[in-house]
Image 1 (cartoon, rainbow, N blue to C red):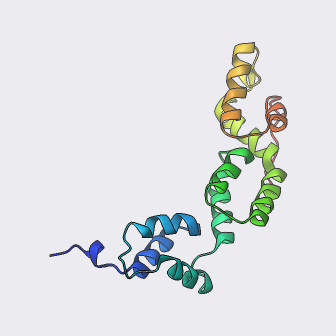
Image 2 (image 1 turned 30 degrees about the vertical axis):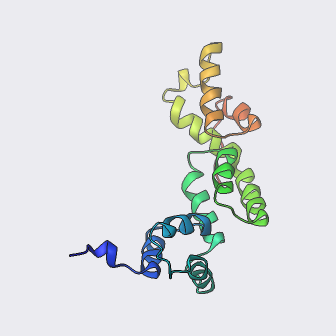
Length: 158
């Protein structure tokens, strides 16, 4: 007897994926193509989902930024958005939104990771400083945001 997963139509499978979280068109196309039969038209299904507003690049972009912003810098988030094939205008809008809060987010990430005690918050040795800079850089924060965060001043995220 075939499993319940095998019986799902491509449309139902797409709706199931979208009910769990927002997906980009490219990401959903990749997932659905694994299950597509010869008679299935994945592109037509994606067009239908977009017209019915089940699939939205804007919502996907906002959701991804919201999920990642607390832990990562603009560079890393933008690189991830780029892998999803979003429109250039949507990318520039996301970049502008992220730039507004990057310093505050870098300060919050730095403080959470390194400032457990007020006395040892700001790095004293060059080795500690380099370690903290590398950590923030790997998280995708700009050098400007890293410099400000390394001062140990807490900036609020608005």
